Amino acid sequence: MINIAIAGVGRWGVHLLRNFLEHPQARIIAILDPNPDRLAVIAKQFNLPKDVLLTTDWEELQQQPIEAIVIATPATTHYTLITSALNCGYHVLAEKPLTLNPAESRELCQLAEKQQRQLMVDHTYLFHPAVESGQTIIQSGKLGTLHYGYATRTHLGPVRTDVDALWDLAIHDIAIFNTWLGQTPTKVQATGKVWLQSGLPDLVWVTLTYPNNFQAFIHLCWANPDKQRRLGIVGSLGSLIFDEMLPTPLTLFHGEIDNQLQPMNQHQEIIQIEKGEPLQRVCDRFIQNIVHNQPAEISSGWVGASLVEILTAVTESLEGGEARLIGGDF
Image: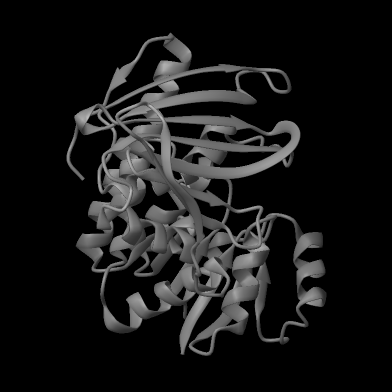
């Protein structure tokens, strides 16, 4: 059994807590949150044993026999908390984004390696069976020559106060595109609008340019009641669509344009995928990484750091109005 602490039991932290409580190789021994009333609610909701420490004090938490900690606090706190956790010898699973700064993200990855501890980022969509199946389909060449990608991620709240819609939402689609393409973008450009909170865009349009000039276009908004979770890649022989709002979320649309500029070979194929909650797979992977002392290549700290670098470049474009080139090795 791995002794685990949870730091932050807000909107997402409570789901992480639930999954680790259900995991046969995990034992929750402490929960940290700045709100004592929230801790009381959580204790009652999950009928927590009396010996689980509920605290608002980070130093009190450190006195427990913790082996691993889950950081589900606001992104602005991640660097400080993860640094402290790694220096305490804890394995760390952090809610995305890893940090809000590329240099700090790289520093955390280097510290984890120095401490010989696992650092994993909860990029939940990378563990979705549809994303895994989609990667296999694209790499098989069934889409032919890849033309472009597109994604829409819109909803009416929740609205975060620690990051903007870009940092909250785009990270999912960028992570999926990177995984499906097996590449990271070399250039980004963005534009957006602010309505609700000064300095935090609520609407963002992002263009990602990958090697070979493949481009992906992303529409993000958390003030749009038309809830969509749709991502696709279009190729010369068809399109692959991941639509999270559908009961069968992955569809391969076959079809191409012939020499007479007419459509041909049109039909669609529903891709059967495994059942299961992606977050459950995230939590299990974290536990197995610790047990077997193997890094989580699919969602390692370095993967998280790369995404932070990309988002930082997109932010610079959003603020400056010009495209930004991306460099660096991860």
